Amino acid sequence: MDSGVTDDLPGLDRDRLPSFDPQTLANPVQSEHAPRILLLYGSVRKRSFSRLAAEEAARILRHLGADTRMFDPRDLPLPDETDADHPKVAELRDLVTWCEGMVWSSPERHGAMTGIMKAQIDWVPLSLGGVRPTQGKTLAVMQVCGGSQSFNTVNQLRILGRWMRLLTIPNQSSVPKAWAEFGQDDRMKPSPYYDRIVDVMEELVRFTWLTRDLKPQLLDRYAERVESHAALSKRVNTSDAVGSETKT
Image (cartoon, rainbow, N blue to C red):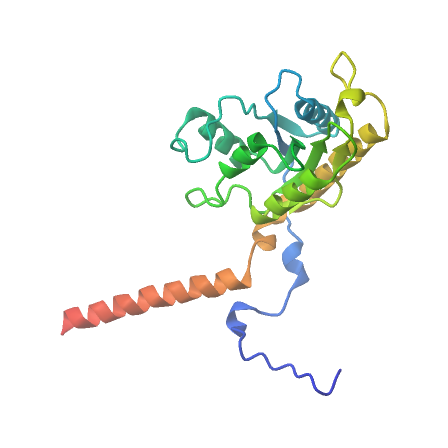
């Protein structure tokens, strides 16, 4: 060890950060139900290639043993346009709460995700009552392009996934010239781009199986433990102070 480096940690609350025990990740509880995957897409066009790509992804997921649901963004109001009790908002939030993983599939428009895609994500809160509907769940990101291949949208989706505290898997899909990759039957043609979607869905299912029962351990954060302890201490001390004043 560098002689100029010490192990002194004066800023650390050692009671809130014990030495790491790897056994905490050996969860004896193993869920047996099929992984629950929600798919969102970013276009309401009659022939939406982001929807068609999501439908192909859903077929692959079901082949891999997953339970899939897809949200139709038509009639979803703009964020802040109405209250969260709007039927479409409530439907979306219920689905996000239900799922254990998600697929976000968006077209690239003007070098970015569509407003329809962003609106769906914006309607999902970080906290919903005592539940954090996205935190610790898995996410796969996909985009379809009208022209040459780009990764602008999947990169943006990754930023949002991190902000929503989702476990975004390493693999991703970007389909260039999507209009040429789907036949008149609206099915994706065999190609390396189709194979990549298979890869992404396979990886998503694996990550979901591996992490869904470990959410309490994966989401247990030092900063939140310190904050919770401070809040509890303040409440207890305030109660004691009020009690003392009452007694006198």
